[in-house]
Length: 417
Image 1 (cartoon, rainbow, N blue to C red):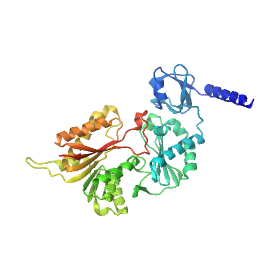
Image 2 (cartoon, rainbow, N blue to C red; image 1 turned 45 degrees about the vertical axis):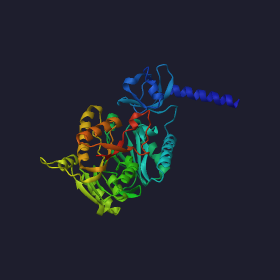
Image 3 (cartoon, rainbow, N blue to C red; image 1 turned 90 degrees about the vertical axis):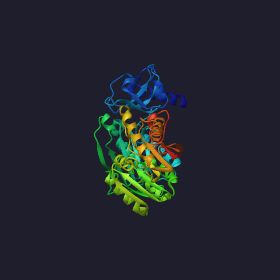
Image 4 (cartoon, helix red, strand yellow; image 1 turned 120 degrees about the vertical axis):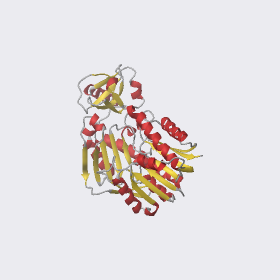
C-alpha cells in the first residue's frame, strides 16, 4: 500500500511540475542538439511558449511532439532564449548549486591535484550555463553572464561560502556578454574584505593577482598546465615572451633553466607586476622587461636594410596574444594579424629554435590556426617540425558536444631549417 501511495504521489508531483512551469516548445529538428548536451536554445529554434514566462524564470523544454527535454532559464531579451540546466526536473535552490559546484570541484581535484588556484566552475563545461567561479587561494571571483544566474546570485554565494569558507568573494561582472542579457556591469566585494593584490602560487611559483582591477578575473588560469610544458622546451637558451602579461610563460621558463628571458607587453601595469613577480621568485637577474606594442617591436626587430642579413637571436619564442577576434565577421582580419606576428617571430628564431604559439579565439579552429602558421613559415623560408600540441588546462573542461567550450589551442614547432 505504501509503495502504491508513494508512486501516486510522485506522479502527482510530476504533473504539478509540468503544469506549473511554462513550457518552451522547440522546432522540429532542434531537439537532437539539446539531447546531445548543448544547453543553448536560440530564439529561432523556438516554436512557441505555452504561457507567459518572466525573464530569468525556470521553464521546461519539450520538442514539437511534447516530449520532455529538460529545464532551463528563460530570457526573452537574450539571443539565447533558454539555457538548459538539467535533463530532469530540478529545483534551483542552494542545494542544487552546492551539488553542481561540488561535482565541478571534484573534477579539478582529480585532474589538477595540488593546485590551489584554478577555475572552479566554467559555465557550460560544468552544466551551469552563465556562471564562472575562479579560485585564487582563499579568494573567489564570481561572474554571472546570464540573467537567470544573476538573479540567483544569493543562492550561489551561499553555496560557495558553505563549500569553501573563503576569505572574500568578489564580483567581476564587466563582460560584454551581460549586455546581451540586459544586465548592467557590476563589480565589487560581495563577502569579506580585500586589500591590494592577492598572492597566489601556480606550479610552485609566486604571482600577485589584482582581482579587483586586473584583466578578466585577474589571471589566465587556462594556461596553468601549459606554462610548465612550454618551460621544458626553453632550457639553456634565450627566450622571448611576447604578450607576457604577468610573466606566466617567462617566469616558468626562467625557473626551468633558460639563460635569459625578455618579456614584452603593452600594459605598463602588467610589466610592473611581472617585474615584481620575478623578484618574488628570485629570478630578476635572468629576466628583462619592456613595455611596448608587440607588433611594432617585432616589426622593428626584423627590419633590415638592402643587402643586410637578419641575425636570429632567440632559442625560444612564446606567442600568447589576446583574442584577435570576438566574432566570425572579423576572422579574416584576425588571420592576417596572426600571420604577421608568426612571420616576424620565425625570422627571429635560431635554427633548431622553438616557437610556442597560442590562439584563444573560439572562432579560429586549430586547423585554420596551423594553416596560418605554415603560411608564415613559407614566407619566412622556414621548415617546421611540430613537437607539441596544447589545449586549455583541465579546470576549463571541454565538452565535445558543446563546441563553445573549446577555445584555446596551441602548438610548439622546432625550426628544422
